[in-house]
Length: 299
Image 1 (tube, helix red, strand yellow):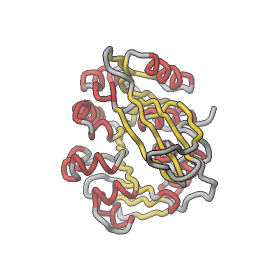
Image 2 (tube, one colour; image 1 turned 90 degrees about the vertical axis):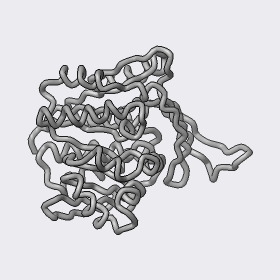
Image 3 (cartoon, helix red, strand yellow; image 1 turned 30 degrees about the vertical axis):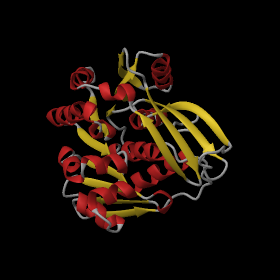
Image 4 (cartoon, helix red, strand yellow; image 1 turned 180 degrees about the horizontal axis):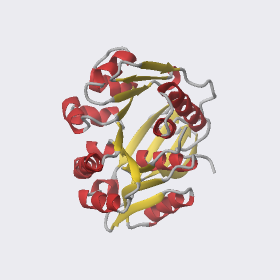
């Protein structure tokens, strides 16, 4: 494989409060848990995993002008991410409470300053990255009305400059709220669309994963459906279909696993790997992510 081009990741920075529950949540009472505060956010996580693989990566995002925001940016800088992050006074850095149990997780989200990401900031950041070859967008940016203009501008500038593009569909519930038709119009003609099982169902209906991916190639040139413990499926407009099984590892916390998977897939694909090899690399990093608590690579 060749070295992947510089990658610009646009999206969210979050503080994750991850609670790995000892058993089912006892609603209205107490449940013992291992609790950890750490950096999160789909875009920030993906950027961190990319940097951990040696990629040249810039994150374009927004935080509050607060201690949490400064800590999140410092963490990313330490692992090699170039941070084009604007601070917004009067808005808190985003926070997500993650309840993890039995291989699944539930998230309670405060988007905070992520809603302040602007098209102007995206323009300035991309102008400062003339050597970038790829843009990866967290769809949370599109799904939040406050930051939608920034997400749309990022994709538009990437097309104008001839960058390849990828979008991670982010989350099923907000996809339902904005509607499949609107979302698919926003991401039309991206080079790579990543969706999990629930997101694929929102966007393509209750088909089998390969059929969902095939349907979505009407919008994106390549589609990958992430199926968790069942592996993943790649379909592209040439008609090629590749499937990969998941690694059999003990699951500690699935937070950030999709972001790790995306980073492995992107770096392999952008480096010239074929779909089978790209899925294999993605699966390796996804397995690594679920083996420990938190959404980022272990230092």
